[in-house]
Every structure is written in structure tokens, then in C-alpha cells.
Image 1 (spheres, rainbow, N blue to C red):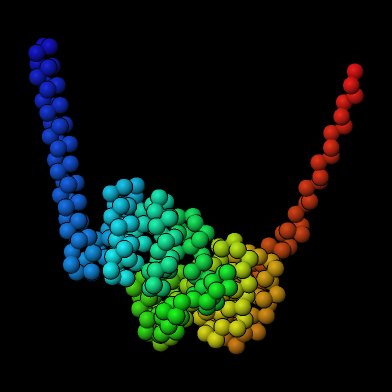
Image 2 (tube, helix red, strand yellow):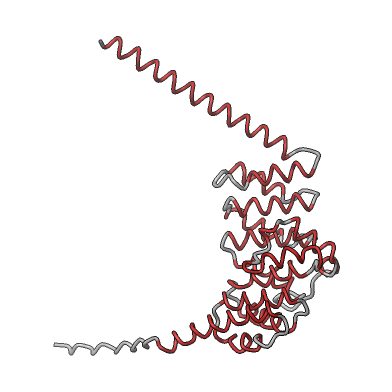
Length: 288
């Protein structure tokens, strides 16, 4: 009986070892396939392979490959690399992504910024602020190359499409925003920048949104700014939302109305909330 048990045990161990070996071989083959894509001479194939890496959460080999691709000579590949690092939750790549926000191509900068936000770094909001306002938070101007790109309708359209519609968080404005990608090439990216700033805790972003909501020429950007103001939940911007009710564009009025209602509710709830009484200082015990 013991002999039979030993034979069965040996067979099971051998079977398990064979299964592990097959699995490892399959993984090796899979990585060989991806590496062929990552090193392919065609940038489209490199970008496609990098997009797949975004699905490999917690895979150090995938993170290393994406970080390396941030230095690729094609901006499309650098965009894909930055997006992949955000998708896979690679917090260890935050320093490299911050460095990438100094890239010469705005599309790469925004891809890195978006991933930084996804990874919990507020540094990612800075480039979106710059896109919306035309200057950095420190007051310095953008580079000549960046200004040229942001004023070029074709390049702006390419930026939005290159990064995918997922980059443009239009929400309720999705249909109108998609249509404008062919008619008004700068609005979608500016609107995306406004919506992204909704969660930026920096008061400067609130000021930038208020300015965009009231002065931007493009209605899509004004509507996005009011949507962002609503999501921001700052009652100090209520007067800006009220002014938006008089906007000449219906869609902007709707966004402003939503902001008025949300901010009014927040303000009323704060006023109605019972104030926490100050804790009385404990009376010191007398020494015996």
C-alpha cells in the first residue's frame, strides 16, 4: 500500500512540475512576443505593445519596460508608455512621470500628468492648469514650442485623438464634445483640462476655472468649467455659477444651473450643521 501511495505521490509531483514548467514556458513565450513588439522598428507596434502593459498591474518587468519607453524617440510611444504606467498603478514610476512633464510634446506631458493624478500625485494637475490658462502656476510662460502646439488646431485635434477619447472626460458633454473634434479642434482639449482641475486642491485652479467659465470664447470650455466648478464643491464660487445662468449658450446655462444647485446645497448644509462646542479645559486637580 505504501508503495502504491509513493508511486501516486511521485506521479502527482511530476505532473505538478510539468504544469508549472508549461506555465513558465507560456509566460516566457508571451514576454518574448511582447518584447518583439516593444523593440519593433514600427512605432505603431511599439505603442500597441505598451498599451498591453497597462493591464499588468504589479508586474515589475512591465513597469521597467514602460519606464524605458518614456525615452522613446516617437511622441506617440512616449504617450502610450505614460498611459500604461498610470493604468498599471505603478507608483514607483512617479519620479519618471514627473520628469516626463517637461517633455517637448504637450501630448506626452498631458499623458504623464493624467497618470500622475491616477497615481495620487497632485503634481499632475499643473500641466492641465497650464493648458487652460496659458501659463504655469508659478506665473512663468509656456515654452514657445508648447504655445505653438496649443494654438495649432490640427495639433490639438491630434492630441485629443492620439490620447483617446478616454482622455477627454466630457461627462454629459460627450456627444457635443465628440462632434466638435472635427469642427472645433481646440475646445475638446481645453475642456478636458478644465474638467481635470475639478479635484485639484490648489485654490489657483478654482480661480482659473472661474475665469474660464466667464471669459472663454468657446462654449464647450465654459460649460466644462462650470461642470468642474460643480464637482469642486467650493461655495465661494457660487457667484460665478449664478452669473453663468445668463450665458448666451443653452448648454452653458445648464452646466451653470447644476453648479448653482450643488454649491447652494453645500453652503446650506454647512450653515445648518451644528457647530462643535469647544472643549473646556479640564480643571486641574488640587495637590494633596
